[in-house]
Length: 439
Ligand SMILES: Cc1ncc(COP(=O)(O)O)c(C=O)c1O
Picture 1 (tube, rainbow, N blue to C red):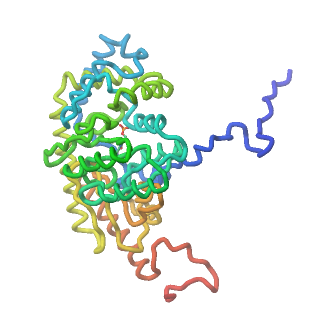
Picture 2 (picture 1 turned 90 degrees about the vertical axis):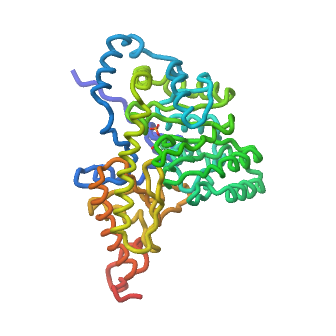
């Protein structure tokens, strides 16, 4: 008997595109992050990766947690391994309110929606707020995962500049007026006020009320993304924007303060937003994972999570100091960077003519990886910037990574001095090829 033949491959007859590849237009804006393309090489052990934002979990009490996991399965397995409510477990939502109280937020657990990391909250908020073409304001630079969600829903990002005190209110005001002249009211301002990713800066307390006032007067919602707020080095706790205005949509996460792999985050939203957000969450995942929520809940109830955050913060401060000292020691003249007072990141500006995206493969070859600046802008800026993360490698690896980066930069600067920009197109072979003597 002959084998049954598989059915013929389906093609779109008009375009000859295979049936499974007739993608929605919105996928055109979805691109892999620059570092993802180099990930396989950058994650080799000989490469010092200053690229990712992976928290350092070495200090977690793993023995205590494994006992907690075993007990959770033994005593509450029937619930922990079952579907749960789309909004999240009520006890965890109460505990999340206690966590947020650390930054001055008074909230009702009914207004908390637990999500699969705050990334999902960000994605769902964009989904329920933005139609294609809508404008979203975001700091320039901004978190690459947020830019990814905005692109996926075909929102247009308009960046608002920052300085060492965070988002600049006058620039925000001016941007909103310019957009208003074109009859455009942005759907929301997306902001990371504390220990910004990637810029490392914090919005000053004086500017917080002003930013809220400006947005309110233009009818623009505020989305506050705050995964790093409890990871300050000087012990200062900044008041959350949400603590000053109950209409702010607030996103939080246990990724940086506990365990990123559990993927537990949340949104605190006004009641009118909550109902839509829960519907959107339901259509995305039915419910957040019960097991992970219950583990986070047990951790918060049974462990000194505040002390754990202090331990994390001390480790990050030590790494930050190692990075700053190495930058000071090794980097060539003409580089500048900020001094972050918390969080994971230093934002580095390199001398004119060096292109950080073009330089990245050469850096990886020299066994150091970073995230180039262009990935943090929706408008192509950032080619003279790069983000360095000090969260993951131990201090001596950070020092070595910066030393390698400095050598790569020196080599780029040699090219710049000889040819102009380090991102020059490849030299053409043949008689018209520029020689090292070409001006
Ligand atoms: C600013 C910002 N928002 C959101 C996220 C996503 O965090 P989560 O792990 O909770 O999805 C990150 C992760 O790096 C981040 O830096």
